[in-house]
Image (cartoon, rainbow, N blue to C red; front, top):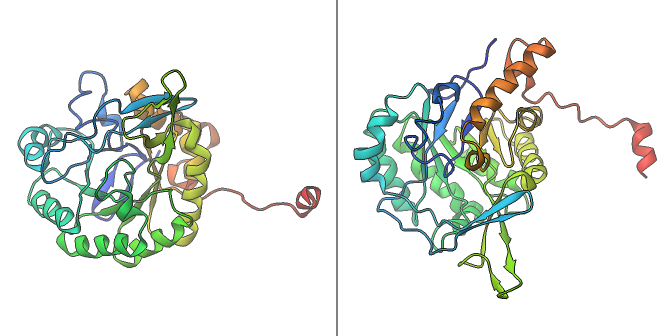
Length: 313
């Protein structure tokens, strides 16, 4: 069965990756997961200097989901190259490095430094984190700024450039078209939704930053709709994510047009989820007589019978 796909120069052995911020830098789970069963690993976000992130409390559970306000805590790009990249080079899977920054210049500096290193197959540019004061949604909800970041990064590398967009906008298709026009090779969608939780005993927010990013199964219907919207607007691949915990969830994203998926919050429950999702997709295809997983991409039958439509009116 054909399971692989490509974006630019990067080849992915299957269509299931693990999402940034949910799988560390790949070495944290080496005793638990055979990453050769994954299409790729998207690393934890990297900035130029190390970031401590937000003060605790910065994670809380919600019904069918999780709120986080980590604040892009990371070891910085220099420590990543020295301490993490050598191990990532040994893995039999594709490595996508996620970059987050507080300025356009910082995005460029981090990418330039990484582009001189072996072992990095593609970049995912995070312009959509709702949990930082500088950058984050200031970039991700400004279409012109998102386009500018893409245009400045594009000449700096020949490797695939994936722009990670926020769902916290009215029309994500406008942002998708903007990054496509500036040379992005693909889009990652969605990042977390802005959410909040309150402790009624203390009458205080459960997160130190009051609001945070909502992820998990609760956001899947929104994620599907945003991915579908973006797919209709652009010709470049869209990698879908948001609440995927099973092969069935992933197949929904493929059907609405996602070329691949990322498993995120489910990794905190079971870090082998991504591998199981990839296996489940293959099993579904075998049972359905499908020889190429790519046949699922965009295979949604979205036509509504007129008689059914009349019954709704």
